[in-house]
Length: 361
Image (cartoon, rainbow, N blue to C red; front, side):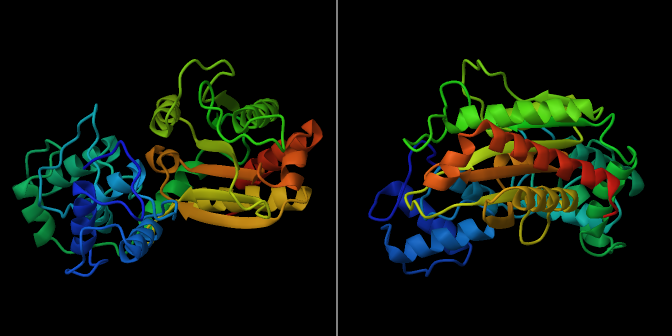
């Protein structure tokens, strides 16, 4: 599918025809819909985006296009194998991960990515049913999956494993590896308005360094995902891979918001989740951080939300993204320009992390 352009209401052409066909196949659009990006298609795109935990804007860009491609795969359509340099993604992998989880195997988080943990779970399953343990899900493995009954119901085992992995490391942040991701950087300055002399990238990096120092003082090993003098842009998958390779226990990503409406204001925190599965520890951490920021600042409570954004999805550990205020709002922008306010934000986030380890779930 085309990925280099943004498509919106009023557009037409071959790409729109393909979007129509995909959404029709998902039952979100009438079969007799024309090949034009009209209001009905806009509504269907927004419905799909909401279902998939994407930004709901009715615009078909790279993330929505990729999600449309992933959504059309059904388990059995293709050979599923572990490709280190280009991990397979799709709804067929979601189904496989759910099947394995229901049978007591451990494919990791149900995220639709055929990563190493899913590969190892397939191997484990194959050994248990007497198949060659090559980690590839082909006809014989699919047949065995269909024959065997569920032994565990629902996605609870994934949540329990995630919580257990966190608990095994003790009841303090000391000794934990925590990656603090300052959004944007380098040529990508993020959002910038005349209401604040700092860009989103500058604000994110400043807060990230304050968090890093405080976590280090608590005995944690804190790493920044990027330097201040970044030469090139880093996409979210690259940042997630950094955290995965570092063996991080948590990831905290810092961003700010900006919209056309200057009234919009406040803080919101995001964790990985879909309508059928989510990171329980990620949700817990998001809520703790959100509560601390709201309690310690005058920012409006925008609550916590589940999303499938790349950094949240591609990290193999719990990750949260904190959207700290709106640069398009005069009051929020003035607060973010104040170093003392950024100190309060850093304090709140670190206290949220501390509470995650020291308080019972």
